[in-house]
Image (cartoon, rainbow, N blue to C red; front, side):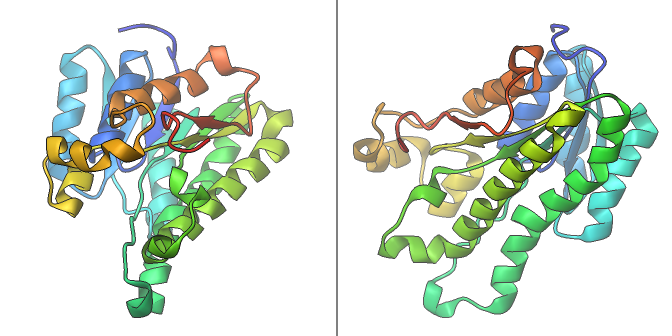
Length: 255
């Protein structure tokens, strides 16, 4: 445990999934009171219990960020429980992998609802509370995929377009909120062997690494802990003058 984020309150969306869980644990270990949030109660309660056993402070609040009233409720319940909010990590995401020729309007809308509308509504609701506390930090988890092109990209087009919009939101908020000491930053994440990624591809981590090795400049997959460490930096006083940043931790996958 440390006190780098002592007295700070953080919300991490999608933190019942592997990447968000690691981020939540990292912020709690740095002294923040953390709201673990996701659609599944069971893992959320377990994560909160384990954070508490390790000496941290955490609380679980269920939320599907594709639903407007649940976005608003997540922030308001956080403020009710902990007295405010200082950090918002928009981590929840919908991969949205559809063959382009089969893409339906509902598919497109569901991806955008999770990946950009939800974060925008969460920011809108959180910002007045951050202003009341004299500042805050918004972290949007990004991807190298918005910088790629080629025929294969069409099957991830909804995901790429929604994440591109999230980057635009990041930059717009950074400029607008700087006078209020609210920082808005983006992390360009590379290729991580999370459970979700492995299940999606139907591969083991070793097999996925073997397939990916030729595409990875540093010869290995990214670790969730590396993303969490980047979030910790951007939410800490070490990054007190950093806003509008695209922090690229992709190991050279995008340069």
